Each structure stands twice: as structure tokens, then as C-alpha cells.
Image (cartoon, rainbow, N blue to C red; front, side, top):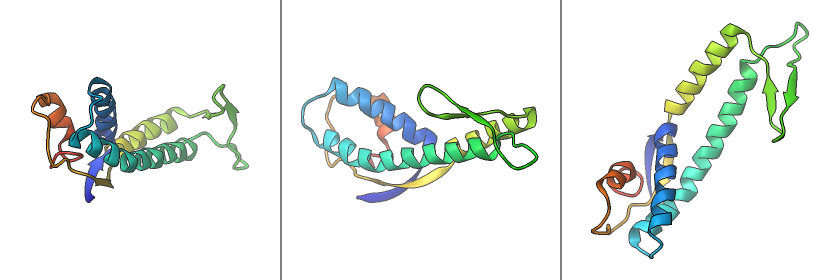
Length: 131
């Protein structure tokens, strides 16, 4: 395993494309193995992103004079907060910064690539499973 830094944006793009690739190519290859190994690490990064997102939503939420933060709970059990106009703008900017923030992940580079690997996958997989 190797360590590298990738943005959350790049991680989500990798995950989406890796899922498409794995559905299209079910045969056992060194690339498939690398994707699965790297997937474990990127899933941890996604969990950290989701926790960060949750913290940002609370941090920028409207609070009452006594410090309480009113919220409702939606059907999925997630808290929904209210925001001022300024709070919402600040939240949007903070989410954008979090999305573009680079985090360290462990990646596993494939030692061999399928000859038929599409160029679009190569671009997305570079830095994750292609060195």
C-alpha cells in the first residue's frame, strides 16, 4: 500500500467510476483487486467527510440566545437545521472547502492493466490504482 493525498471531490469521482467499472468488468484482474483494496481506504475518507459535513451543518446553524440549536428530524433520521442568510452562505463556502480539501489515503497500485482499459477510466484511476 502507498499513501497519497487526494481531494474529497476526486475520491467521490473515483468511487463512482470504480463502481461503474466493476459492474462492467466482473472478471478477476489485477486492476479489480487494486480497486477493491483501495476501496477500503477511500470508504474511510468518505466517512470522515460525512462527519465533517455534519459538524459544518451544526456549526453554521441558527442558534437561540440561550445557545440551543433548534432542529427537526427528517424521515432518514437526519437532523435538519435552520440557517440565517449569512449562515447559509458560510455553510456553502465551508462545504465547498471541505469537498476540495485533500486528505491522505492508502492506495494500492495495479501491477498490470487490462489492454482494453478505456482512457476515461485511466484518467480517473490515476493516483488511486494507477501510479
